[in-house]
Image 1: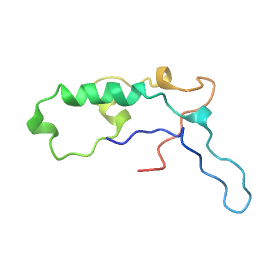
Image 2: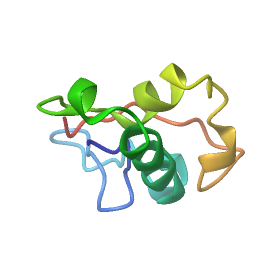
Image 3: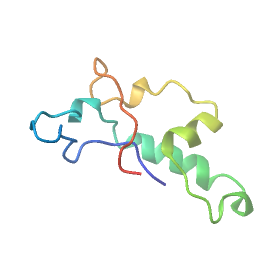
Image 4: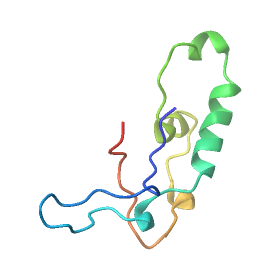
Length: 83
């Protein structure tokens, strides 16, 4: 499962050194735990051999408001750039 998480470092604008993504735009580890719970409580035959992205797993379970997972609720959540 891939996490949409930007706590480790951040992208920089090439050549300018400006930080484009900061920890403020990241998500808390609870998003991974909740997505893992959804996967692990499903039938194993439907999940084996799949690649999962945390917010897509949660959306399939009806969770579409991810604001509760924001490190900083006032900052926008950025999509994962590490997939």
